[in-house]
Amino acid sequence: MDGNTSGEDGNDIDWSTEDELEIESFTLSSSSSLTVPGREAIVGSGEASSSQGPSNSKVVDHFVGMGFSVKMVAKAIQEHGEENTDSILETLLTYSALESSPQEQQQVDCDDQFSSDSEASFLDDFSDIDSYSDNEDILNPTSEKNKKLLSLVNMGYTAEEASIAIERCGLDSTVVELTDFICAAQMARAEDAHLPLEEKPRLNHAYKKRKLLQYELLKKKKLMRLGNKTIDEDDETVHLPNPMVGFGIPSEPCLKTHRNLPEAALGPPYFYYENVALTPKGVWSTISRFLYDVQPEFVDSKYFCAAARKRGYVHNLPIENRFPLIPLPPHTIHEAFPLIRKWWPSWDTRTKLNCLLTSIASAKSTERIRKALEDYDGEPPLRVQKYVLDECRKWNLVWVGRNKVAPLEPDEVEMLLGYPKNHTRGISRTDRYKSLGNSFQIDTVAYHLSVLKEMFPNGINLLSLFSGIGGAEIALHRLGIRLKNVVSVEISAVNRNVVRSWWEQTNQRGNLYDLDDVQQLNGDRLEHYMTLFGGFDLVVGGSPCNNLTGSNRLHRDGLEGKESSLFYHYYRILDLVRSIKT
Picture 1 (spheres, rainbow, N blue to C red):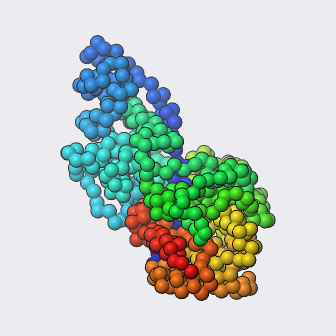
Picture 2 (tube, rainbow, N blue to C red):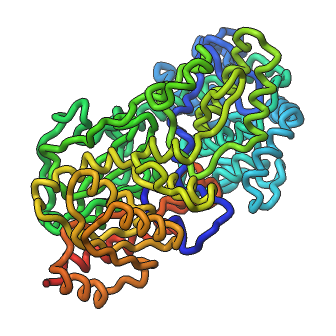
Picture 3 (cartoon, helix red, strand yellow):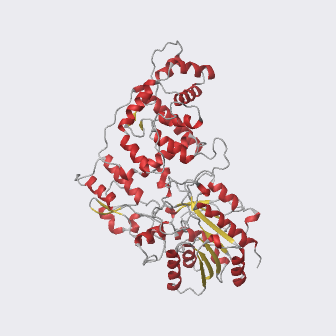
């Protein structure tokens, strides 16, 4: 996303491009090893053991052996019959989520005593949430919210975590979506983990089996939801491709050579809109609906450079005869930074960096990593390796000495994103990271825009909304497309100065008009510019993603959020451009 992040400069906290901290990389444990939040790994086969119950039925014995009560089992069998064991199991799990036995509630309370530090850390990330009592509402599951709260508590999460998840995700969210949210928040605070891990109390056998079955059922449902179609055929869900290569990448350019665009979307003028790929449910469907029903092209920039950047692009550009920028950028970490190879430990198997952030790890974080490693002459234990690698992936840390990691320097981020050397030099270090973290990856965008070179041999008139540090302008320039007239709209004075400086340093012969607010760009001003030089050939931009990313745990409000609602101004302005006749 190459754009301003809000209507104000100098925000202390910026969540815009943490890219969900690669939430999709978090997977549930296998059935043989399962980690329950706040507890030690549970190990088991998932097979039910038999125990003699009051009933003569083998089915009753089977489920009673799993830890369910005879009364509960009998009720489930009455509903589904003895043969339909899958339905019986699902019903029993539902019952157990709504009705805790005294023994189980006592076990949960006992475990919560040992996880109070973890809960406090979790709540630190949500300081605007009122305190919540474990017993409040949980004991009276009379509402849908209380049922979900109890369900999450019975799965091993705390009441605080469950309440916050429901508050942020909405009451209509599924249990799977709520557990995903909690897991993402736990990953986000991974930097506060302390080594070594404390020993946690072991759970009783029946309790372990029940929790394992619940997790396995949720995992199965999640996998079904991630298939080509959702179970409920929800037409608001956009499925991200895997691999995320859009209509083609330079190494595989011919994945798709033709698409049928809706008649209302046919250009010129052409448009190109970008935002983060991993958004709340329904966001991309809404964006597509407003942008003339054009379906997004999802691309991960790791196929173009050494850093991931999962983005969706809605555009009406041709997709035939694309070509990459030359020279090709480095595609691996060691190609990009050959001098650090000698310090790279063999157990750090990263070849690509994660999405480049708007902020960097603190000195405290890197010092904690050094202290965790310095006691070991050879390879550290697996638990230490995991801690270090989690931190390195989260913050894109690289090895710069023995047991020493460091964040990327701004010049290195510029190189990875395809910007000219020293492009952002001259502004504060904090502003450099923020501006770069909110920018386009030049090689990816240039590949999509390359089709314009043959179409506009004499140059192009560009309307650049949420211009940021000029990603679209630089991509077109590097493609050899002359910039005749550029109207650049960007709220940040720092970013506007960066673009103006680049414009002058590259001796552009066209005209640059810079404005500061898309909300003030109305039909009269657009008509003035379009009359002045004959209209726009391309409208490009990426509105703020602050309220879309999974890393924004406080205000992930979708397109209704304060910053991300600026998308509607992109649509408004584009529609005006396409309707004004010059």
